[in-house]
Length: 159
Image (cartoon, rainbow, N blue to C red):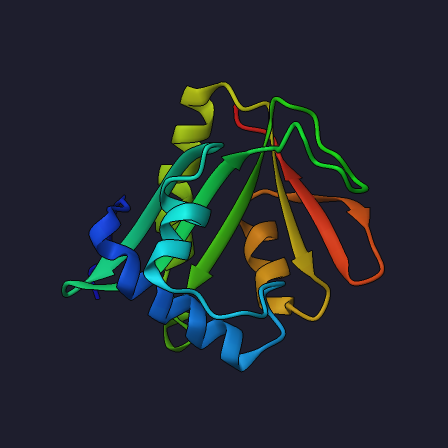
């Protein structure tokens, strides 16, 4: 299996929506509950105002994962507001392809983009029942820094 990672394009939005919708339908690993269409993929991941980067993992022309990195929202009205020089990460990998290095391939690109952008810390907030996601982020070098009722927040500091 040869997986390549590249910047996400608007033309990738349909495949990305199909992927995240499969993950949402399975349940238990994402906070998202409503299905995505291509417009929502573009507005949430590929081209939001606070975007740093969004990469897709591709195997044989098919998207098998994607990862987005956004600046922390300076207007966040809720609890657990993050500093403005922090970023928030989101990772989605085809459930049939876990454990094949897709997340590592994506994170290599994302970590480089974070360092280039001057990000001082990356927050990954993961649902507690998402043991695969918790393990993945730990393998990437993230460490726990906050625990909520339903989530664990991990931090990574780009070098």
